[in-house]
Every structure is written in structure tokens, then in C-alpha cells.
Image (tube, rainbow, N blue to C red; front, side, top):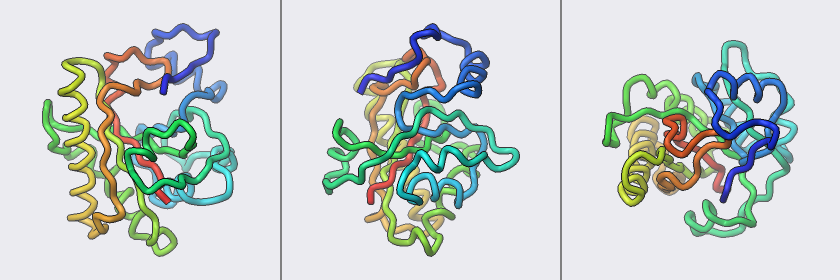
Length: 207
């Protein structure tokens, strides 16, 4: 799916200018909320699973100290397919998504220590009683540096590493976690394909 951005803003913007623009006006692009610092488990759970409309969730202020870039939210349609790949790729299915800057060792699926706080909150969220029956899709993304085929495989391994972490550290059943790598195919709106900001992990509700 090709991401869209405001026509009045040039495609190649520095990160600081992009953040200012997003703070002034929400950008209708892909349905993803990008966090720079670990959000709370409850905040993420509400965005992914709570309420009848994700639009309502975006109208609430972020908790104090949490930095995030809001990139569009609209009313979501729950997926009616069981195949995880179909869920991730279906153009007919609108899904709320949270993007976290999970960092890994270079050319590796080893999760770096600095990213553990993000995953702890994901684990806490999935362990909460109100979300005990919820399933998620873990979607890995890379930038466009390197070969496309390698990037796809690397993103798959990294998504699987996140799934293993949640299973091992929080005893989240593997049946609730689906890992899916998209490589360099979905760069963020307003970012060049080679921008390292595209290296991220997105989490979708699979319910």
C-alpha cells in the first residue's frame, strides 16, 4: 500500500520539521501511532482494542512525558479472515496500529537492551485481564538499505524475535502472536525509503 502525505509538504523533510508539521495538524496517511518513548500498557491496549472507533482514542491527550507522532486514524473494520498474511496485506481491512522503534543489533534479530522497556509494556498489555483473549500481529519493517530480499528475511526474523520475547518473558501463548515481516515495502509517510526511521515494529489487533 503506497503511503500518502500532505501535498503542501515536500517529501524529503528532516525529522524535526516533520515532527513540527505533525504536531500542528494530523496527517491522514496509514493507520499507525508512532511512539518515541514507551507508552503505557493501558494506553496501547485502548488504541488497539478499546472503543468502537479509533478516532475517539486519538482525541485523548498522551500521558505526560510520552512523545508520539500521530499519523492518521479512522474508523476501523475488524478483520474477518483468519490467515495472518491476508490480514496484514488486505486492502479491504482497516486496522489500528502502534509503531515502536524496536532496535536490534546490526544485521541481526538480537533485541537491544534500550528497546526492552517498549516490549515490557506490550507484554503487560497482553497480560491484562481485559485483553487476555486478544491476539496481535507483530509486523517487522526495515529501511531500503541493502537487498530487498535480505531486508524481507531480516524483518521476518526480527518480528519473530519480538514474538519469542513476549512468549518467554510474559508467557504469552504463541497462538496469540503472529510474526510477519514486510521488509522495506512500507516506508513511513514523508520519509525516504532509505531513512532509518523506517526501521520499526508495528503491532496490530488480530481480533
